[in-house]
Image (cartoon, rainbow, N blue to C red; front, top):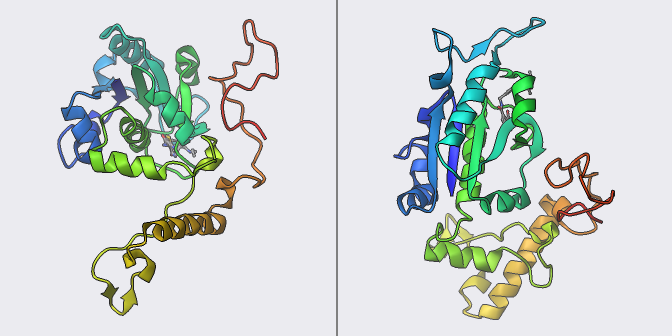
Length: 272
Ligand code: 9D3
C-alpha cells in the first residue's frame, strides 16, 4: 500500500526514529516494503512568491485559513506521481469519528492520500472540490491534523498482511473477537489484565489462577475479566446497550445513490 501525506510539517512523518512512524510496527512495515509512506510539503506547491499556504479568514476572526491553490495543486501533483487511484482522506475535527471498522476498510485500499491541516481550518471550496472522506480521531482539540494522520496510518499499517511479527499476529488472532459474537462491532471486548514476574511485587500478588497451569481455567478467567471490565468501563461496546443514532456515512451511503433503492444499509454497525 502507498500512503501519501500532504502537510506543511512533512518532517513529522520521518522514517527514522524518534519519529512515530519510524519505530516499532510502522518502521518494520516500511522497511519490509509492506507500506510506503510519502510525506509531501504543501508549501512546495504554493504559487505565490513567499510560498504562503494560509491567509486571513474572510469575515475576520482569529487564526489563519489554508488556501485552496496550494492544497489543490499538491493533491493533483502527488496523485499524478503514481498510477494507482488514491482514496482521499481529510483529518478534521468535523469528520466522522474513526472506528476500527473504518480502519479495516481503508487497509483494504491500494493507496491513501491523507490531508492534514494546521491552523484554524481549510478553505471550504477546496474541500468541496476534493470531496475527501472527512475523519476525526475523537472529541478533543489537537494543534493540527498531523498527529491524527499518524494515528490513522498506524492503525491501518498494522492491519496490512505481514506487518505484525509472529508473536503480535498470534496475539491479535486470539484476542480479536469472542467466540460466537461474529464480526459485529459489538464483538470487541476490552483486554484482560496482564501480569508477569515477580509473583509478588510490593506486597501485591499476581492472581493464583494464572500460575496454576490449568489453561482452560486461565482462558475462562480471562474472558470473565474482559466481560466484567467491558461492562464496567465501556458498556457501549456490548450488545443491547442503547447505541446513539449513527451518523450518515457519505462514503457507504451517498446522498443521491445513482441506481439504488432508498433505505439501503450496506455497512456493518448501522443496524439494530
Ligand atoms: C475554534 C474551533 N476549533 C475546532 C474545534 C478549531 C480547530 C481546532 C483544532 C481547528 C483545527 C484544529 C486542529 N485539529 C485537527 O486538525 C484535527 C483533529 C482534532 O483536533 N481532534 C480530533 N481529531 C482531529 S483530526 C484533525
